Amino acid sequence: MELRHLRYFVAVAETLNFSRAAVRLHITQPALSRQIRDLEHELGCTLLRRGANARTELTPEGRQLLAGATELLAAADRIATEVRSTGARLRLGHYGAIWLDYFAAGLQRFTRRHPHVVLQPVELTPGSLPAALRRGDVEVALLGQTDKALRREFATALVASVPAQIILPVGHPLAKRRRLRLEELRGADWVTWDETDFPGRKQLLVEACRAAGFRPRITHHTDSLASMLVRVSVGGEIGHSVPMAARSRPPGVVFTDTEPRDAMVFEMHVGWMKHSPRARLIADLAAELSAVRA
Image (tube, rainbow, N blue to C red; front, side):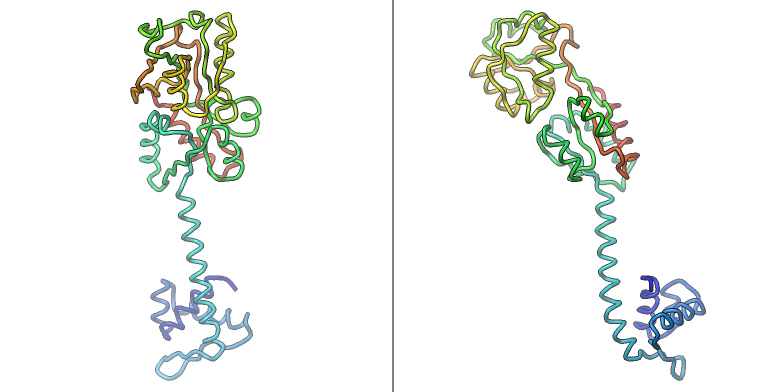
């Protein structure tokens, strides 16, 4: 017994007329009659009786089936609606409005190309995004820096490479410079990103400074941009971040480019499960994001 058999039966039971039921179901009357006979044969009982003047009546077994079939079909329709709704939603894991704003043009192009898909942003810390992908809490994530282990586990695509900026307190002797070489900051105290919440960012600073000939003296780790800005403004340390952070014009600090600009580069990768049934859709999203230029 299939759901279509129940739908056919319910249509006849509600109209008590095979002709009207056939019109409602968009099938021929002989085909409908055949489906009802097949259902009765499978159940081993008579469900409907045809009386005089083409009048159709429900048998006691038919009334019993009608009650259960109506409930079952309603539940099936509800489940189908929920599944379709979920299928139309693509949950995008990210860690802040800065990057959503940066990728705004790409996100808009994607939604125009896929008007049936609703992008649902889910904000998490960068360190928790891989676990969210594994659990299925999100289908795609902006992972930031990635390592070999992440690239082995997930399908990834590089969508942005953004030169870092140095964050200085306004009173720093070098604060009025538009560009700084990292070696000019050899003796500075640095505030960097907590490795648990922002994996890869501390290592990015360490490797850039090593290439400039020194090891940075790191005095504090932070778990948010706001904390870093306060630390730089009040504590006098030096920080590093993406240039988009400067758009809010935080007081007490200045943002300065590195010289050369690629001395320290933040990368943004899109990641998703390798065998995701929505891999092609996510690849389209990654392509639109990679086309964005700051």
